[in-house]
Length: 199
Image 1 (cartoon, rainbow, N blue to C red):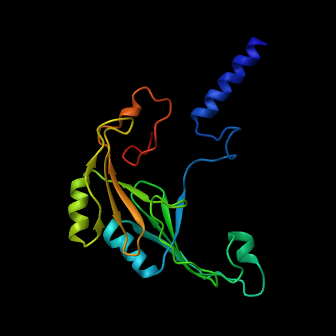
Image 2 (cartoon, helix red, strand yellow):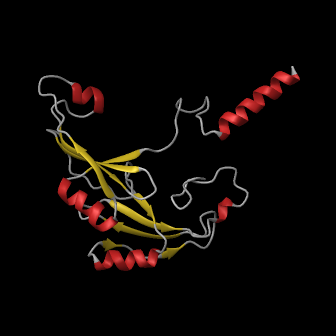
Image 3 (cartoon, rainbow, N blue to C red):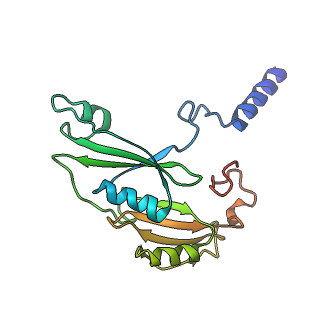
């Protein structure tokens, strides 16, 4: 019996260290692949992500629609008459991808959530120097918020952050933690970081 338990423990350790999903996760889950964002103007969005942020366009495709059935509702949970005019995927350095959608729909709302709104969100980009990022963004005419703001206390101590905004209102963040964060000392799980993507 001890041998069975030891073998089961060893198998669990090997599988866990290989990054394979466990019983308490989606089977085969490996990581975050992309974040999808609906934008009001595809050219503006692609230009911003490629010419300002520094991402690279990988592909575009579409349109997608179903003028006779409920395909769009069944697959995406949108109005059956919604149309995806275009989808563009961009890659941003060492990190997951961003999928940009240009939709039209009979019930489409034009909402730009604040970070404090339920369903609000932002995208953070790791940078080597937040002050240099701010100077660059300011020179490009991008709306930036207060910062660079160094975090000096608590588990996130070691970070420096700066929030900024895309022309259509999307919230973004520049973040850096060149010597790590305080929580990492003795942490069982450390956050994935594009500065050390192999960890």
